[in-house]
Image (cartoon, rainbow, N blue to C red; front, side, top):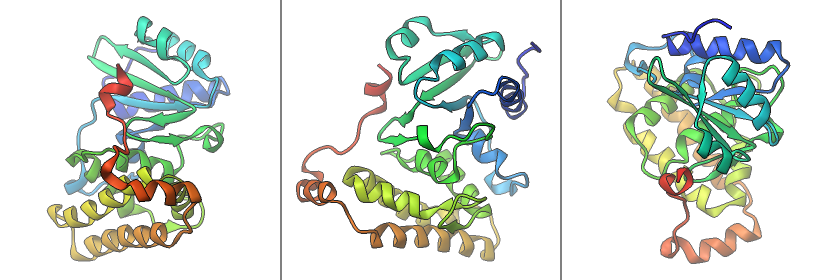
Length: 249
């Protein structure tokens, strides 16, 4: 075991290498994952990263826990005992950082299923799920808009996962869950409005806006499930999201 590295991006790569050595499915999500998919980051979209987020398949808590403990991280014992089937927390006490591990799905304001989409040896969750984890926040903040713009600055919306954001996957999930649809579409529209806040060239801004709008069009065109239609009748009269503090408890 080497020591925990002070540079967060380099540390994420160290942990991913340890996972590959152990043939463990252990992949990044969050801002650092976006950064790894953008080796050339425009200065206007660069930012600092404070924590690491990983995902493992359902049943992967034990493997993740051993990997992080062996790598020098301290588990949050009580939280992990109570929530280990869905989420784990670890701390880097030297640098004052936290590592979150989401098990089987990403659960904050909405639940994004992950297990069947995690590939052994992969570096991050697929780009579709990576974008969804950024846009599922009910009160979108600037860093998540920045990450969204950076992700779509370098990746097109397509019908597949090969170095692209799988728009079909996002549209499918939104067509099954009215609450997710409500939050994702609102945040896509908000992101379109914020693209001009970043010092990018006009062709770059146009490219990102077109991709955001193209994804919105795919989501709206997707046939909605019966459950979606029933929930749509209730609309915003009933809360359609969880509050992160309720999930973290």
